[in-house]
Length: 266
Image (cartoon, rainbow, N blue to C red; front, side, top):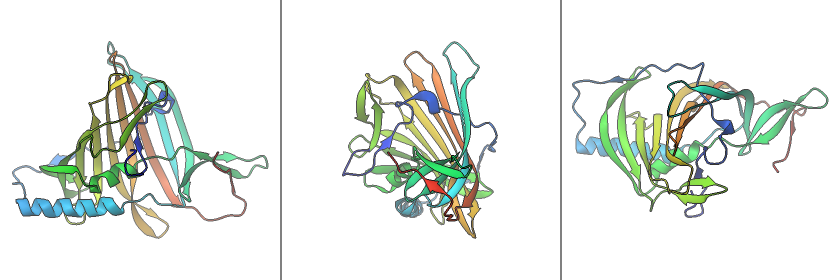
């Protein structure tokens, strides 16, 4: 997202597909569509959207937290119905001073934290608060045992900051759309999807889409809303589909320790 000097949202697929993963251990219940419920009035919809925008504007990733992140790479050709696993990895990660670090063992056997690629979910949420993001009512849904408002949103090319980047084929800012499920009383986001179809012809992929799930967890003595899973897809010109799922679990507060070594980002 290179616009107004802000941090760009970048496609995870156009850099390298070695990170693509699948959720294997986390099962989500299909949300229940609240039947026979009339849509809220226009003024009530505006109130819900205003709360959502307010929540998105202040959303941030928490620093000094530790968690386990699992990645599994699979792909499926246009001629097959089966997914084939290419890669899997589980590692302990930490967010510290705006950087992401993954845990390794130092030469003395003590934990060492090496800088890694920061998971980029924050910009997708903050985009919902920006001028130019359009919303439309979809339906009521039951998620996490509570009624949530499902909204459709769209961001045109003029207001988008989503950057598709592929070293050998350049980069482009593209429009995108999706759905967001929000708490009608507080604006909290529990589900967010992204759908990108207007991709310039020079890129490898013709369609990318993404579904992100949030939940409330206890970190230290406080409750925080965090991403617990993210499933990403990309389809190329030959019809091959790549699937990348992250699962995040075992969240806890990082306690400062002089025996922990941080490698400086390169």
